[in-house]
Image (cartoon, rainbow, N blue to C red; front, side):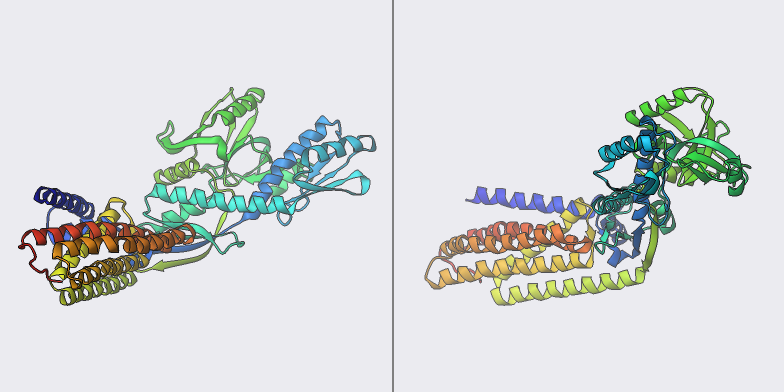
Length: 536
């Protein structure tokens, strides 16, 4: 019995040391300041405690719809040529206000059936197709397709922003949909040092594309129109140049559909050009590289434009076939902007631009007040519970108090190992865990008292008390853990923190209230004579 008790005691001490290490880590010294710094490095404080930035973002989802219809427009023009409808053309009559609308005009009577067949075979799943006067056709994207594109744009924006924020090292950010149906995103960044840079990284679409150059440079938009007979080609669009050189401010006429874009970029890293100025080197995916190779092979001697966020950053002449690597040069990069652009290209382009609807900064004074109030409440509750257990259960109260302290150490150690974020709801979870721990001890102690009143010996009463209370304790803990799991699955940031804290606290309580508490009882009984009463 004594050897078994020694093994159990060593196990408890080992677990205690492991979780104390989880709380403290390896502090640089043992002064109060060093220990406090080590703890705060391992257990992060949430936005409501440490301060930070609260943002609500509006995703301009119509841009994602417009990008899809632009791609479809380019395909329609190619299909019209393949069908022999040389006089036919396709345009977007209202690209800003009705990005889902495409109109096909100029179809000759003898090609009407061929064009109708092409449109219905290739686009009827995505568009409602109606015919009009002069053999024209209007393609209107179906509402279900529009809604799907908007929802995908929102989810892709959330994933992209989350990856960018994670790469910046912001601990435990909250990034989630805000207000279903509004296409808005809630972003909470606790304890950030450079909110300006984070905002720049979030809002930049970093939409890098390579387009064929159809004409330019032009001094202004009017010059571009005059050079093209007063109207632009249906598959072309004007873009302003801003490459940091003397040609900045000029315009180029580009083919609307890009050669490569977005997901075609596999990697990007900051680098320097031959003059040691910062630039960015990018690498394409295999599919994007193959497509780029085919394009550059067939267009040697022509110009292509590197476009970033609808601005021409560089225009280059294709001197030979290029497969999968290139550079974005220009005098406008600094070291930091080159790093930011590389980060954004690595994490993927946002499908649409972002507008900031709300920005609120939580100051550290509010966090300090919240921490103080939460800690004071937890300390007061803990002290009251410990005092009650000592007064009401006498010697056994010491047993319960030791188990509760160990429970708290295990919970904080778990948070330290996982670098969890502590929020006010998390502190509430800690306090509730203490309450559940007391409840478990009360069940056990009252059952032991009943067995003692029934005339059983102290050792038998302890055995029966733990045996009979065990099922009730497991039942209460499992039901609470199931409730916490539902909160975690369907709750938002701080609510999830509360659920995690409560769940692990309850698991720790099963260990301390049942195993640790019983070991302490057994150690106490071993020091007593057979039949000697216990203090409870």
